[in-house]
Length: 275
Ligand SMILES: [Fe+2]
Ligand SMILES: [Fe+2]
Image (cartoon, rainbow, N blue to C red; front, top):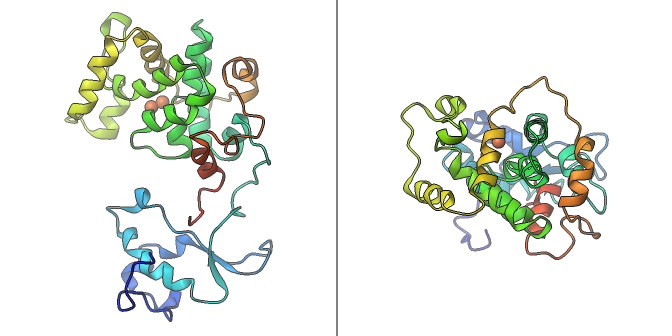
């Protein structure tokens, strides 16, 4: 933002109630946390929405107004712990992200998927891949979630598990009748009956089918489709042993081990940091 010229910089005198109606009505206030009794210093904290979340929406036009807000002495950008989120332990483990960061529906989907895989008598690599397969949707980004998710966990799991997570994204779109996998009904609702995956996804699917680990990823997709029961109760501790054997938790905590993906875990610890 520092490359804005003086003339382009937003006015420092815009107060929330003076904002243009279209910005106010579109929900600019959603990004501003007024001080509550538990606030340490009584200052307002602004969450600067990530580009990936607002590009292509009216919220993308908030940037100037939000920058202007911080010119008030009682207003700063959110950095560090957001009081609206549970505090994470100093050395967070995988379980802490499931319990303190992921939404109920995302956590439940991952746990149910792993439970169905266990009930189907599948091996621990498949169970672990199911437990992690949508971790990027749960905590980081939905677009390209298989790839983000695979990268996030790659330093801590067997290569085959990370591969299966990456490829499940493409395999989900393509039936494999030899193992009873059909195109998900949910995708007809999500994307419409006329949706066709783009060429790069088609190519990924073709290449994955020829790979020696194809069935590991295919099994992730098979155990994916039965895992949206909203009433199901599954406990992360049910998988404590599987996680213990298949996920190398760094002793410094996820986010602080200096691995090439530590920043992804830190982004989930402090998702509202401006920088
Ligand atoms: Fe997925
Ligand atoms: Fe899934």
